[in-house]
Structures are given as C-alpha cells and as structure tokens.
Amino acid sequence: MSQLVLTATVPAEPHAVFRYLTEPDLLTRWIDGLRESRPLGDRVTRVGAKSIEVVEMHGRVFEIFSEVTALDDDRVLGVRITYPGAGDTDMAYELTPEPHGTTLRLTVTPRYRGIARLVGWLMQPSTRRRLQANLDRLAEVVPAKGSA
Image 1 (cartoon, rainbow, N blue to C red):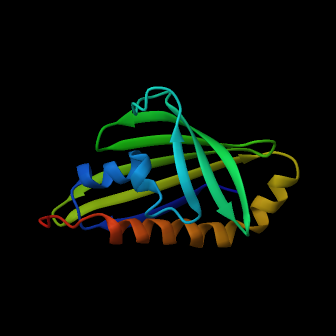
Image 2: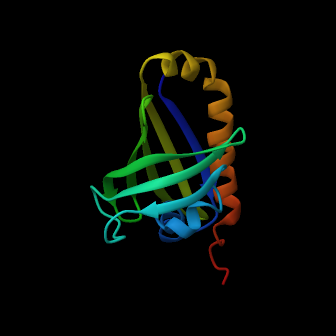
C-alpha cells in the first residue's frame, strides 16, 4: 500500500482541533471503530508517549499500540500505529490555521509485513474512504470557531 494524503477543513481553531487529536476521551468521538484509548505511563502527550487503542472492526475487538513520534502543539502530531505481527503505519497530522478554521492534512505511510502487505494493497480504496470519513466526522464534532 502506498502513502495516502487526505485533507479536511475544520471550522475551528487549531487548538480545538489538536485537542481532538490528542485527548483519549475525544478520539472515540471521531475515529470509526475506536472503542477506547488507554494511555500508558503518566498520560502526558509528548514524543515517546505510548497508548493502547482498543478497536472493533468486522465484529472483532483487538488492541493496537500507538506511540507519539512528532509533536508541535496545535501544529503537528505524528503517531506510529503498530499492528502486532502485521507491521506499522505512520500517521502525520499537520494543522494550518485559516481565516474560517483549520486545514488538517493527514499523511499515512503504512509498512505492512507478510500477508498484510497484500491485504493492505487490496484494501487501499476502502482504507482511503474510511480515513476520509474519520476526518469529515472530526470536522463535524469539533466545536466551531466562535461557539461555546
């Protein structure tokens, strides 16, 4: 599977959007299938912070691991998602302030192993749709600029 680049315009300031990218209780509001995000350690978002993500997909519940790889508050968040036995994926979020909100750019770089490489390639169109739907949902759930 090759790199994917997706964008969304969120009618909120970057700080509000960034909270929805980094606060465990807010992640489940916009990421399809995410049931819980369990930070490990002191729950402080910083490079090297790790968490376990509980995901339900196709009727199965499983855990994946995530680690913050880049952080520039309200501007950049990098996360590496590790799928036990199948590889990992880097997800880079870039936030750009705009007059009426924030442009959010997501770059997804998968590195699957074994049979997961073939499955990832076959699933690329549906993965793109699912990720874009997540970003579109994020744009809907973050409180709009100027609202309480």
